[in-house]
Length: 474
Image 1 (cartoon, rainbow, N blue to C red):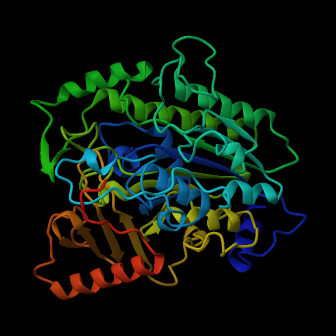
Image 2 (image 1 turned 90 degrees about the horizontal axis):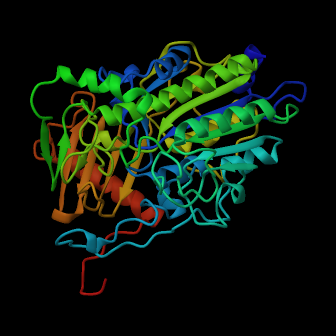
């Protein structure tokens, strides 16, 4: 089956899968606020993620995997639909921060949708129409009751509702309308993992499945995972002095990973990944299950007083359009397609998951749906990219990380970020300066002007909502 899957994906990508072949299953791990540098396989030495690292060693690790937005809801919508957040009109976390929450704000609040429109087709709806069982557990954050996962293509919903962080915290009772605790002090991630494994054990074995586990970890509130926190408290004793911070706009960025509470929450995710991968092995599902690991935005690094993690060597984090805000830990293991321990440096983006899953399943592409995504199957098989792509981010909102409205573009190795609040742009060459420390906008004004024009042309084409100056009416 494994060789047949590779042949089909590459030779007739998008064609109907042979009736006699067994369609692959999919497990999608989506972590909340996990930074690119929060995992061992991307260089973290304080956080320990042996199970995630093992997954990377058995599949392909992407070094330039991008979220479509530096905050959660837009990226989640992009994964679900294969469409850019601007296209689905979800450009901020739901419901977002009002402009008046930012001191001396220049622009009015931009109104976008507070849910994923019912007329959008999700990857779950797409797969279910082709005979898949669909299971969702964890954070939804794409609409209120009546627009939860079961209304968007999932057969089962465990814990997914309108809130972006667990309203009662990580220990029961959680005050979650679709997840009742079994006992006091139950840990949310452990329960979601148990429910996911229960689905694997009790599913309709006549159908392939999509298991989509969207962790609430490691989003605030930062509450220690008691089974792991003591280890990191001891480990943190290696550091001397206070945690270093650095000014970033109106906020501060954490410059060292040394937070035991946060590290324990990362460990909870790693334990969960290990438990589910072990269940796949035990149930003889590993050789026919594609596993995807991703985060919805960068780690929370920059806030008014510094966030709980550091994304170094990348700059800043969640809420910001620097690399630390949009570049994510990303792993795909596709049996028969990916080579164990392979690494892909080609930039890709969260809209790509929809067409990639369709292609790996041997199902026809649906380009009118996933219009902003491309199948990654050739890259997964070790092929070189057929063409360079340009990537766009549009985040015209104020954010609690002290970000102010702006947008950015990556074209080849070049990246430009526009800051509308003070009418400026910064230009970086990511090949030579991945940490975005050397602004080249003054020394290379031609390239800066070229990218600004290209970004503005895209915004016009997409009918992107642009900031309007405050005129006394909020």
